[in-house]
Amino acid sequence: RVDIRKEDFKSAHAFLLPNMSGAFTALKAGEQVQLSAEGNGDNYARLMRLCNQVLGVAISIRGEEELGAEVKTFEDYGKPNREVDFEDLRVAIVDHYRLKDDFYKELSLMTLVPSNNHPLQGALCSLGITPPLLSTSLQDLVDEPQEKRFVFFLANSTFTLKIEETWIKGKFGESADIRINPTRDDVISALKDEQLTHVYISAHGQFDHWERQPDRIHFTDKLEVEVDALRDINNKWKSRRTLILNLCDGAATRISYNPNNSGMAAALASGSQVVVSHLWPVNPLYAAAFGMFMLDRLHAAFSVQDAVLNVYQTMDQDNKTIASSAENMGEFSSELAEKIANTNFPFSDFRNIGAVAIYA
Image 1 (cartoon, rainbow, N blue to C red):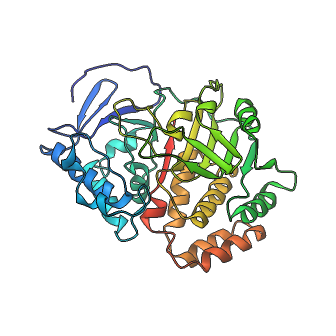
Image 2 (cartoon, one colour; image 1 turned 45 degrees about the vertical axis):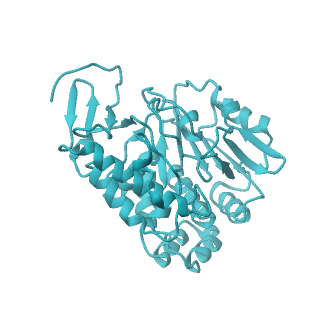
């Protein structure tokens, strides 16, 4: 380890350089940490080919060699491939990033250079490790708020609206601040309000993997909010907000050596606004269950990192066990629990639980 630089972060922060041709290297204050042996660049190219195959995208640094023929077989680009096992992706992420190294237990923040959609935090959760936040703002974290105030934005274009609305009223009371199909100004006003410490948005994410179209939060065909309208809001506050973007592709980003180049969560994150979302499209019922478990843990004073780990572990079970955990949250969870118990696909598949990401 070589003393190469000093940083102003009070929180433990590191830059991860996973695609270097020699060894996988991390840079943190006063240290250069080598986490792998030679051949790292070729292994990174293999990992990119696997990600392209399972996620239905075509991402490359060096050109065609990282794309592979698999991406040409997709009928629905940008959505997870139902024909592949996402466990292969989890194992490959653990291996390439050396996630079993105690180094990750020392971190609060990490920045990927280049940025990508690799599910590091989901893979860390699979190992029982509290995941560091992905820092795209390069700002230090401010403290959690002493008092909490929640607001909930829902969309009637999602078939889980009634499940979420019923659950939220049961957990937070009939007077819970629920806003269905909010206007652009409603969302902007809420994100400007420093008193709102927890903002939950359940809608559809519009993230174009192929063209540089504006990223949007879709509530109805007539009500959409462009993320660019939200990113310029001054959110440098004394206490931290948690923003849950419970929508598909909310945490997706593009490969870039500028870590905050694009993506909804990456654009809205800062040291005083932590953003939780999904790296790729997930099943709507899974998303609703994830959101309700997250709100339950955050209401119970979990930190966002501990909440994500706890929810991952809760949902890394068979569906009947997850349904039982939902019932334990209260009688108002009965419909949610029934839906989970009667669902055919396993919620515990890494294509679901592995998509989680937290940005700061």
